[in-house]
Amino acid sequence: MPTIKVIYSDLNKLIGRKISKDELEELILLNKCEVDAWNDDEMEIEVTSDRIDLLSTEGLARTLKGFLEIELGPPKYQITKSNLKINVDPVVDQVRPFIVGGIVEDVELSDEGVAQIMQCQEKLHMTHSRMRKKASIGLHDLDKINPPVTYTARRPDEIYFVPLHEMKAMDGYEILRKVEKGVEYAHIINDFEVYPLLVDSQDTVLSLPPIINSVDTAVEPETKNLFFEITCLDEQIANYALNVLVTNIAERKGKIKSVEIIYPDGKTRVLPDLTPETHILHLNYANQVLGLNLTIKELEHLILKLRMSSKRLDENILEVYTPAYRSDFLHEIDLLEDIAVAYGYNKISPELPIVKTIGKETPIEVKARKIRNLMAGFGFQEVNNYVLTSKEILFEKMNKDEGEIVELANPITSTYSVLRNQLLPGMLNFLNSNNHAVFPQKCFEIGDVVKLDKKAMTKTQNVKHLCAVITAYSTSFEQIQSILFSVLNYLGLKDYKLDENDDNSFIPGRSATIKLGRKEIGLMGEVNFPVIEKFQLENPVIAFEIDISSIFS
Image 1 (cartoon, rainbow, N blue to C red):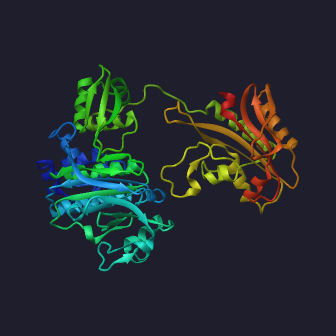
Image 2: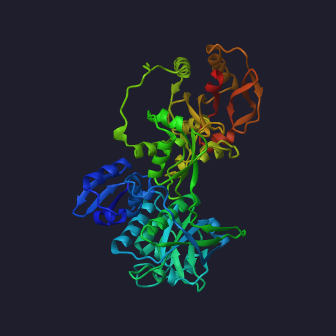
Image 3: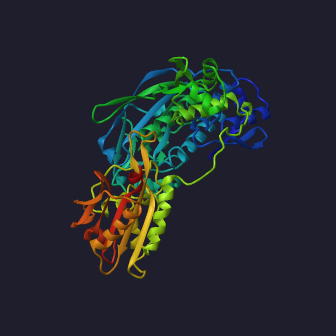
């Protein structure tokens, strides 16, 4: 979790009253943060990674004012229109397609205020923006910019400006080789033919995102008007970061102004957009989860303490409006977590569950255990592959067109970027790692695959599959068919049959769809030669995969 530095006296000033250190530590702990150390007037606070609005003194003060009931309800931020426009060049689509921006004017910042802006920017880069990969923030002196601004991309040898904290102009290649931030973040853009660039109407460079700003628009002690630009791969991530930054400075009496962003297709966006998000909260659900007996009026008051507002739809349902700088509300349960904090965890009495339960295997696990024993009896060895895999293994190597799957939003590596929707690709990849072993090889796996399900609360469903593979110098369709039929008979299934299929992963005419009655429960056959080549396997492979969950549902 990120750690921030906060000046105790500055925090008290923003809150509007002095809070004792003990009370402050207790309030901070309630908000899922923790004071790590005191150094005279300075605190080091560890902040929970999902509360990006608390990555600064201003955000912390805003939250604590609600808990102390100094201010109740959402902060009121006025946004006026500016004359600044950002024109987006279509060429940026290939490298970093989106940009958001905002202005804060009439800023009277102390040294600590400046330090907090820089700290918040740095922590947002580290956490929320995934080390600048998803989004990168640029801060500029608005008065040094000649509108309109153009967000474009150019070849590295066509980029030439003096980077921040440097003394001489450099081209794009030099910046990535010689400048500290260039070396650190070069990997984000150096594989592209063009690099993203912000310039004004005089072709003065503002920044080379996500690397570094230009010295020409640098913020100085006398700067009064600030311009934020955030280039990104994910607009939602960038908008939350922008909302945090502009509202933080507004807490120090800055005036927020909007920026118009014009995309190549003619669509425009006016940002920042501080419209609250809407969520539904049920009183009976809140009381059930928290073990309380709150009235609708008490619930409304707790919401005000959280710097939110609500509208009563009936005596059980509230429409809750969460502030635009909060990015951590995904579900009703997230609201209840904050309600519990506002109520006070120390006021909630712990209770033992009323119902006594004894743990035992679920019916599907009982069946799976029996199948494991059976497969071991057939001479198969069990393996456990990762649920995380890659599109290359699921589709390209399997000789299939790309289908709908669950993808990770921020994968560390493309090797583990999606959730598997079948077991066979992972089994073939496992065989590839065992080309050196003795043949024949007989392996099986019983494990979860993840399917998209729009009706489910999480929009996904975990489904248990069984997959078995045999690779040997000589294999046949009948060999794997006999194993499959033995498994189905062992499970007491009668109404099963095989139908022809044209799955590209299997040899045409040597594969089948497995049906139970009219329901398809799996596939089997001889793996196609292009698939064997792509997985670099030395011998033919026969396989079947069935959906155990579907059989027993």
